[in-house]
Amino acid sequence: MRLAQLLDERLLDATPAGGTSRWTPHQPVAQSPEEAAELERQFAALLPCRTNDPELWFAEHTDQVERAKALCRACPLQRGCLAGALERSEPWGVWGGEVFVDGVVVARKRGRGRPRKTDQAAA
Image 1 (cartoon, rainbow, N blue to C red):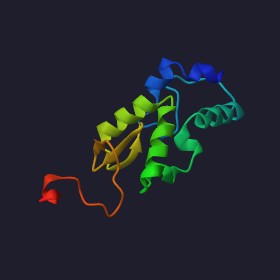
Image 2 (image 1 turned 180 degrees about the vertical axis):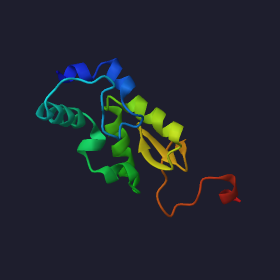
Image 3 (image 1 turned 90 degrees about the vertical axis):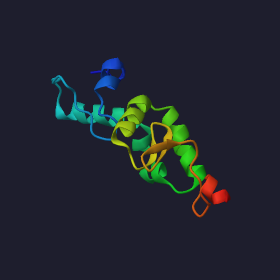
């Protein structure tokens, strides 16, 4: 089975939301365990969240968060990851190229120790 076949619309639609769990085909494919392992390795190599430090997607520093967002933009599963995170109301982290704080997408992650950006803080 060729890697290019995995990246067609059927795979992107069939991949679990968020792309964080192991991909399993809906229709059984006859292949040896070695072929299956190689296919999984090649597929995982295309996903930045599997080839970089996982802590990057849950970093506290703004520059690291922005790096994770940039890596997500090149991911073939970005839309599915974002849709899954929205559906699950992920409490925090970078999902599908967006920053989540308390289950809501925010434009930018503010650094630790910074005051909240609200009308109450200004008063």
